[in-house]
Length: 96
Image 1 (cartoon, helix red, strand yellow):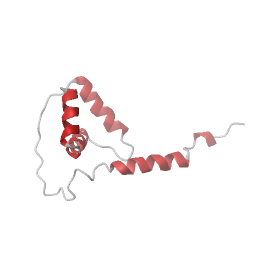
Image 2 (cartoon, helix red, strand yellow):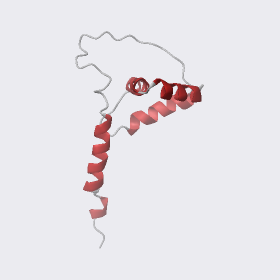
Image 3 (cartoon, one colour):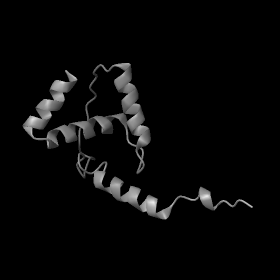
């Protein structure tokens, strides 16, 4: 008789995934701790359908918590700013 044991997530795999996700630390690297006094402004920019769909996919793939489209943009900026000038230039020239 087949049990439901194979439906349970492997604890070892789950722990490994949690370790990987904890390295990312979504929400702590690019936000100030106190946003109660922060002034947020709305900006508009154009995206292709493909880029917009990629942003949506990334928001859904977050395993730790739901992140917004704005969070995805902030993460991208944070990632670009963490690169040295040579790496950043290489990536930018690939996209242009």
